[in-house]
Image 1 (cartoon, rainbow, N blue to C red):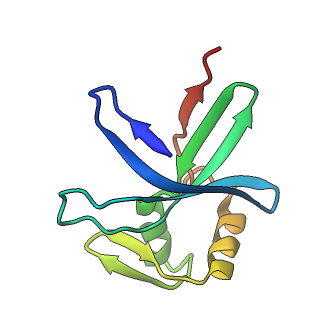
Image 2 (cartoon, rainbow, N blue to C red):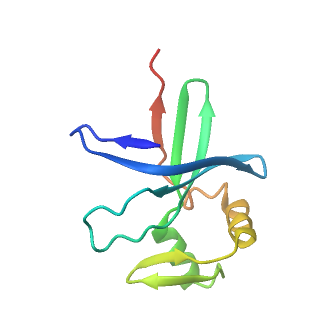
Length: 118
């Protein structure tokens, strides 16, 4: 998958799409780290909604995740890098997490909307 910005820059990702519990998700990870020394090559987990020619994509919200862990509302294997939460859980734990919170607007907020041009 290639994400192209209006300024001409682009980033390449490895991307997999699949279903968990009847809901569609995108698992993506950058192909290269670029020049940023803060970069960590991790997977980005996003929920997908497809309706006709409209695709909505919302990534799992890091601040929501951190708040849920801090408030002991969620227990999942992770490490922290400053304020960032990096999940290190098993595939089964991650599936359980997304199924538990798939309908929570805080978990997958503000989807990007893409419309196919014909």
